[in-house]
Image (tube, rainbow, N blue to C red; front, side, top):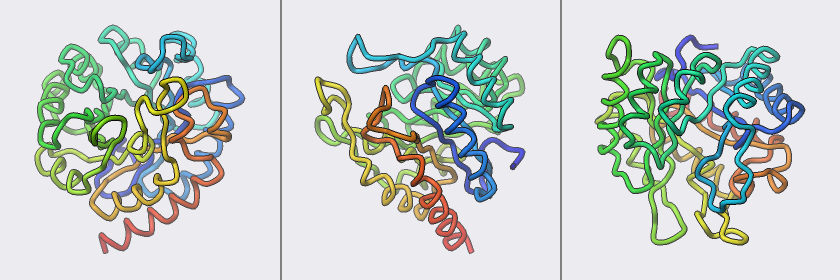
Length: 272
């Protein structure tokens, strides 16, 4: 596995279920990813959220919570050897999360929250900041600078930004493939393609929940690699249609390996 969380010279993968579930599910996904890691040049990071704080409906399942969620992530890391990532939604969550996980992630809706970005940076951990759906690529430089400036030794090393689509009217997203080159040029950090949330249809699912179009995950992911993405973010689940969140835009676990093999092949070809 590559030493850097976000290598710029080898395609890497961040993958896992949308939110943490029971140990059986978490470990089933993580063990599959650990086997897949041998085929990913830049390594694999297991991701899952302890709290989905931005669900569409107030009664929707949010996850295990901070304490139980971090304990679950620690078990995943111990069992598989994979590095683990989770979202943080409040500045107060960053320090305790940093005691357990290897990478912190800032959700797209929070990419301009100064206190949160600075608290994440202050942990010294690698930080992935997702681009807000309303942001232009160059606008992410401010988020990068906030994390950078708060790090124990100010640096953009170990910071990444993620493209996850821009609002296209109401309830749909579009990915501008120019964004990968533009964000890399302006921010000076690796750029990740979120193939999962780029096909999300906010508020367009059953009873106002978010819908999605997972049939487009593959084509958008491969196009992003050809367009300069340094890494991939893909949520996956053994049975997405029964997942507690983001099922319509998650990849079935048994299809992930084929997509990654194709992505690695394209990466090698465009950088040959």
